[in-house]
Image (cartoon, rainbow, N blue to C red; front, side):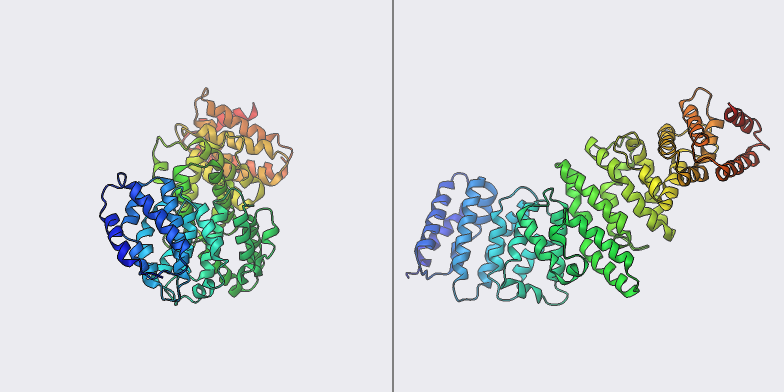
Length: 515
């Protein structure tokens, strides 16, 4: 029961004044080992616990080895556990130790760091009797930050939901001081699920079990834990519930709540897209975000509102400033995942395009103009699904392809004209029996393809590909009276456009068609 303050003050003062950590590392190790032994072996310590910590902690963590850092974290964990058992107010100690530890936590939560950080941080939270600034900072750092160390975030969240004493304190946060705990937990679950390749991770599975019983989530889908991929199941089920809702208030409430859950998603994914360190995580990001944009576009975009989630996602994933440079070329991994998922984004933009939004129109054109040349030749290209599955996205995509690459009356073809024409060939070949698709091709692309034939030199490759598009349309099994009438109407339009000034052009076209 002796007071150790007088003995330890000179030691900690020496540690604080040490400038060369590497030369004094033996002193630090001896102090930490001795301190841990004293705390563990002495049932009652009479001292000011703040004397045990100081400015030496951030300096030591910055310069020591990872093993030494882990030893310090173990000692701090033991110290916090001892302090927690004392029947005193610990706000000052909590604030002091977080002041020294937080720079290291903020550094490691953005890179690879020991999972002990989550344990120590959670133990610090348990020192709170009231909602302190330190408690708020810790919760915000782990659950409302754009960190890339998802293992650390996942562990902290898993530990947090088990704290029966701490959770009521966090649930009664003063209004306006922070996001409600339930919102932060669901956002944390979505982020961990989005950025974890292993959806069956034991910690993540336990978080999913907890989230499934939260009132709002349980009302949508309580069967989350048993689903193959809980996050995908949640997105699909929420979309279906929104579409099935007849009441405007119910739809508005659902949209508002989901918008809060998804806010910040662009910031979560940005480091992974920019660094490209994990192809598996990047592939999951493009697919999951694509499902969000495709199935719930109104949750991530509101017309005329600046800085929407959709804008942030498109800027990070598809349309960074570098994408507009002539020498832009995505990495092979990015090309592959975009080829496999771009149809999801086109579908979502098509649904939003019903609002006649100039921003959505511009994004759609940029997406097609920049990425169609890269992805159209890929074996995983999914763009054809836009045309085959839905009229709205089919019209949007085909119209955009024509306006970007097959401009009318162009004296020379666009540099990527051949890729666009090959894409149209692919559509015509895959859907020769689909009357709706062939009719859509004629409506949106026929005159543009004819212009390529009329204005290209005879030996230009684009001319032959354009001829192939027409042949595939004429020889399709769905070719009938309705499509014939549409084609005759298109020929009439071409004659009105060109016969008065360039009569040779229509005649050369008809000669080509007859051949």
